[in-house]
Length: 626
Image (cartoon, rainbow, N blue to C red; front, side, top):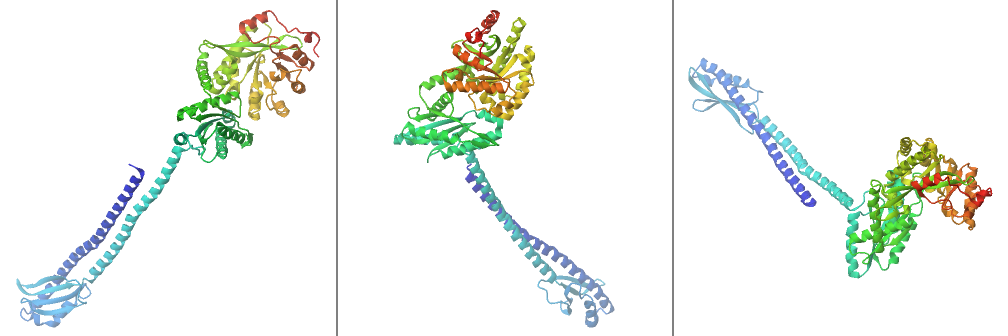
């Protein structure tokens, strides 16, 4: 039954029930006084009869004195009748046996309603006359009228209430139901958090846009937006603040829309923008760039200033699909390609992206099985002391030996593992395997050295990180001082308070801590000195062009001097030439790793190198460095 039909039925039912109640009240109002009247009149009738019997009994004494002349004794008759004044009697009449009126006594005005009682005057079984008493019915009539008025008024009021109140209740219910229906309808087509259209309304508008575009031969653009690193915001600032940020993002997106455009939220941090009328691809590109620039403005959130970046994929109708599902899917594919290539960019869909998306799906499915199938292996790259040339440590680097694709580059599967959450079990496996291997080499008699293991952003944010590291060290038997944990500079700089707490907990375990890829983030000296770290690793992007590039040379020199002032050791990554090595030695760099000495090796080859006691021997070291 439709909602409006149901409401109409309830209103009609309530009115009819109210009318029935009103009629019933009127009937009751009439019946009550009538009942009172009948019962009271019957009672007064009995009283009139009783009074006539009493008078007849007293008149018998008069008959007894003179059976023939009693009716002539008027004074005595009058005296007997007068004794009944003020006893509710209106009039008394005495008749002889022939019905002739002998005497009468009137106490009140003639009653409106006659209620009489008649009794015979009997002596020695002979009837000598009759006494007729007329009862005063004025009180009965008055009381009945009062009751009739009262009950009628009450019935009228009750009837009005019973007739009108249900209608008002239904009218109120109708308003409430209508409002509830509107709210339900709004919730059905809008996102409850941001108030933006949801997937249902988006599909409806997109369907209309495709039909309209087909008639007018225009293009339709679908923009798929995904906020970069939103999960990190949720994990660090809490889901409540994450929701507030989504609401703020939604408001900014609305300001970027043209008339007739639609921005919808699919869920999580995913939004879709529908441009129902575009003439060329650059029209959609302008909107995408406007969105990127709008979101690049800082957000104030719980005392934090956040800059939100977004990756946008764009598909066009009819070139990239002729139905809703295909257009959204292809825009999603283009968005992932944009995310892979960096932040705050947009990409148009191309058919070649399907192959990349299929490869990504294949990698994701294979990665979920890689641990069980023991397809993952660890390669170790030695870390060299630049003053002695000895191997003092090694960095554990995971590799994936895919049965069909061969050796898969970490740049392909590590970001995928981070995105899907597989980095948590993968990272723990790497940590455990590296610790077990290092302990095994120590037990085999090789010189003690530390193993350095990277912690990804998602690993570092996970709960129970310190407990997991403690458990791995205990199970492997490796001393904490022979384990170094690396976090990237971007992770270290995200939420300083939380990062410091986690680093302190790890430091209390006795492990060494290093900041990886230093120089690529936005860390400050003030922040860096508060972190309980031991080592800074200079990113290879700065090492690659030294000493020829004066800017990279200046940055590298500054980092080394800063680390020295903070009493931190420095490791240069990606050292590949003698010139680079000489530059680092001249400026006091402590250690290095790179292809100049050795590329990452499988455990067997690394062990063989240790057995050969390989050292870094270069002209720079031989000459005494700086």
